[in-house]
View 1 (tube, rainbow, N blue to C red):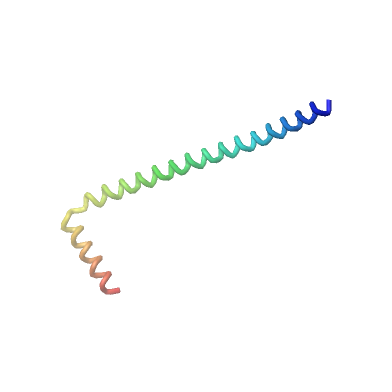
View 2: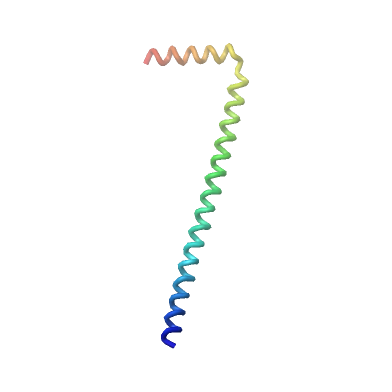
Length: 75
């Protein structure tokens, strides 16, 4: 009876530990999903910005780059 009680305590401890580990695993997976969603959002924003820059006429873009270089020399 004493040995059975000891096994029961050990089993209960293991079950409790297993629940904690499962909760940590779920939280970790949730964090990974959030990270993936954030990365997808940032990639989408980057793609939108690249499309915007691609629509700028080449002569305007060249002038902006020239002005940037000029501004950098003045600093």
